[in-house]
Length: 481
Image (tube, rainbow, N blue to C red; front, side, top):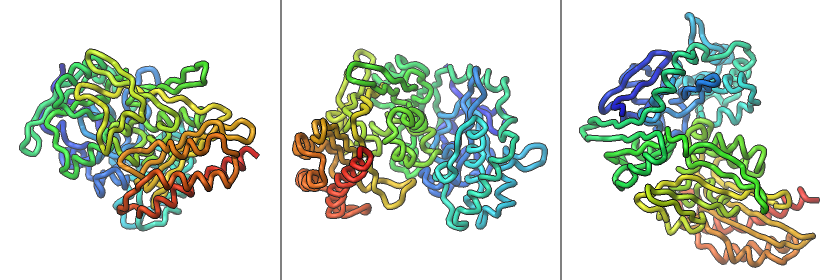
């Protein structure tokens, strides 16, 4: 079992021993390698100034370089990966298309955010080279700029994408991929001193190994790390032993299974939001607008479905959809597996029905049928990169003009996501009319007791509880007409 990390930075192979394995990627790049083009501003994954490109090795196809926020990625999570920083983009003394376009289109003023934008544009250019269609307003939603007004940055992105040559060609050679793939198959047992504290990380490659480690309740499981790394950066979380799940292949992947009652999406707990967005574009298009505002691309490329569930937030963007569709969670230990309906999983604020020796293995979610009408709503102060004030999922099925099935779930109105059973019972049997949904709003207000906080007052949330039902009627009624 290996006791050190191996990674590539701008094509140079690096070995990392001891306490440095527990640094964030941004701290390693800046403080150990002197690559200070990677900026750190928020240390929360909100601003994108620390964006770098990261590729896991693929032996059967070219490596895919994805932009991520390096401030919320632990170094032990990128073992065997190729990392490209803004310093590594230029080749043969010439600027990369993204760098040159930012200069020619005047996409920079104060310059602090510029390296992150350049790396996000480079990542988008790679995606376009792989045949993806790009909307730069969405592609750059994970980067914040206080100076330019974004227009010149979007122009730079369009110019860079128009150039024919690929952008990170020097770092995807077969030699790196072969060695790196072999390294990624190794389990790791890391230890070292970080800030005067003895730390450990166990990085298994199989589910059986991970569940064996989970027999000990001490190790803190980490998947994408987009929440836990923020707490680490803020000094609010200091586990002395990490259980890194990022290389357990059995927890990855998404399949769609047919059945008598319709199709069921089966997602490993490590399925990322980028993975889910790809599947939902074909299988559940109603969810796409919500997923496209789930953080920015840098968050979606590493944030996981399982992490979003286990984090237990009542305003987690995935939960109303999972509750409304009746998802089931598969929890595994070294000795047994059990299935828990997602509604029963949340016992209270941040209180979960998961035992100390268990891991969330996969999620089974029935997909909407063609006759179902589904609306997902996220209300926040800004569209992108913001925490929700209220989230909702409403699924209605009708026979003629009468409602036969109703499933409604609200987030942000209590200590957990709330299945609105009183409202559902009222809707069943009613005609699909505006009057029905206005009355349903009264029912909804009667079964929730939201709090007032920095994102909205209780009265505001109560009004939203009414409004989303009316929104459902006006949008879905127009679709069916």
